[in-house]
Length: 316
Image (cartoon, helix red, strand yellow):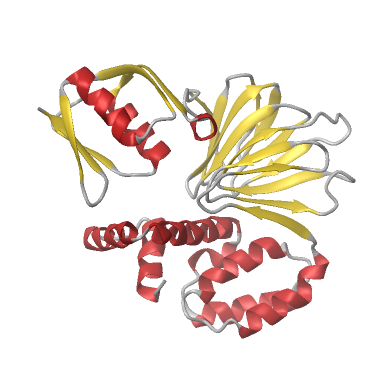
């Protein structure tokens, strides 16, 4: 990945990208499947820096020198986060020699087990019996004293947790803008630069941000924004579709259907004309996107075509 592409990705994540550069970035993403993986790695690294005040705008060698100074002076940092954050400076062309030698020297101060996924999902069973299903392009960090004095993990991306009960040691999930605490339950968490969304499948969880703490029960959902402000939101019927492969729509507006399909299939879908009056009631069980669009087109007398950027839907 060259420096120009990294700069385009960072500009998009900072919401400062021009339309011309957005087109250039989209073209690069469509060239190869590996480009999407590289994009997600930069996005994940960027997400990890959101709670590290100085690193939010890393883009110069001067910043990297200051990072090294802080690495020298503080040996009690969370090195899992700092090495990811520092990688943003590295892909801008800064020499990695010092980074690797210093990082290796200090990793003994914080011992972590890290689980990362690429394009595939991964199921992890923790020492306490908790089962974690990690979605693609996600990362889970676990301190090696997990289960002894605490049960704290850190998540970037999306995961489903089936937490083993332990009244003496609450299970805690930390993201860039929220903290979730439970004793034993099942829930889904999805993180991004903009927000963290949680949805409870069963049991009860404590979900906290910068403004308040919420107690959520079965089929309740909440969201924390990039400032840590949390609020109750409408549960998403398809929140678990990435695990089950099943999409359900009950008299859903077409705009919501398109957004859900985009998120699930990870492909852009555009619409031509006003489809606001179109609604969909259907269930798609582990089918390809073309099959889903075929069914929608048949129901509503629409047509679609595959483009260089995704799919385009329009009236016949």
